[in-house]
Length: 455
Image 1 (tube, rainbow, N blue to C red):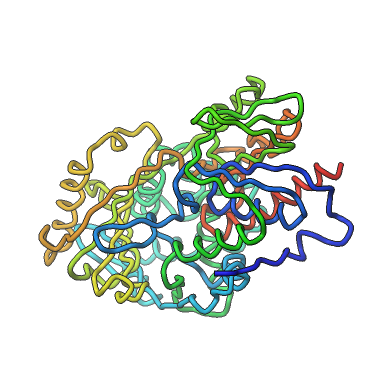
Image 2 (tube, rainbow, N blue to C red):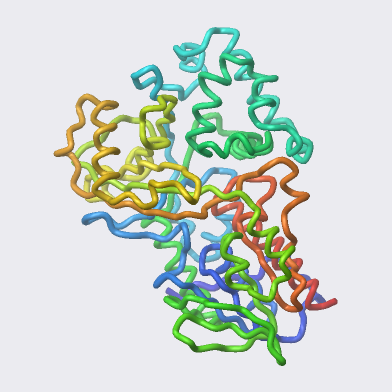
């Protein structure tokens, strides 16, 4: 693998390069990888530090039984131009596959398809007037451009005003609880707008079908090629290295790792989740550190299952029943060629929870019994004997909740400590957490960081 990555012309222009400096990028997810790549393209010396053994962050891969694929479920939309650009730069654009998928709902104890306009009109839980208001809500949200105004409105209040009480109770509230748990009470209307906007952006490509994409080999293949390109560019990658602290020193910023070793850099970019930032950066003033601590976060407990046979023909099955212990059923094999999994079926069962939820401390066996028991009730043809492998991923800090006046309360990327910057997924203020948004955030972050260097 000898992929090369060109400098994005939209980010760097003649005359904007700065003298080489020593940079450390802490965090080896897609955000950290892309920031490191662009800093190196601007002629800086860059070290990328990641505590996990491999790069990729939330997009990394792992093995479930004999199947190796993404640890969490991911999908590429037609409108995800930044991801598609990266695949092209890595020389693996031909690995991208597009598939027409279907969407289901598990509601009132049964599976219902809602993959086209006709099925929408037949959707059992809602009356015709409810469906009209639901469709109008989605259409209206897709046309909104002033998303900041939505930050001042609680999401449930906004949905009730547009969709009505019945639709909110039957559809929106179960979906909000599934995605945010009780954090939905703190979210602004910008949260649901961002989700609708991304899906509608895919439709604006000209396709009216539900076309989703994936790369053969999964994100693991993309990450391998990306990491190879970073090394070829001269970036030092230090994986399996946990950073203990980042502190001011006489000649820059001293980065100490868990094994007691340390190195000094001119500038450091931290891409870790917001609650981790004060732990890594003890020199931050109290009021600044508290701004990071006060961001409300959502975590995930996600089970991956390898089954002998399929469950249904829906890529995603949304769940409106409160007794089901997971958020949705993601049947990856409706999107990905089953040959990638040796003819087996790969399922994700995510549960979005607050970082202090007791589910994080539950054993794999406890989660397995609960999740598989619910599957057996949802799918009469499924039995526990169909499960060939089961594995649980736990991540306490996945996404920041877009609370009321979120963008006004978000700490800036430039900290009060000279040379220290923070750029993480909390800075995705008008979108949803996905790889495409992450790469776009990297573009914005590097433009700001380099402007600080030149100042």
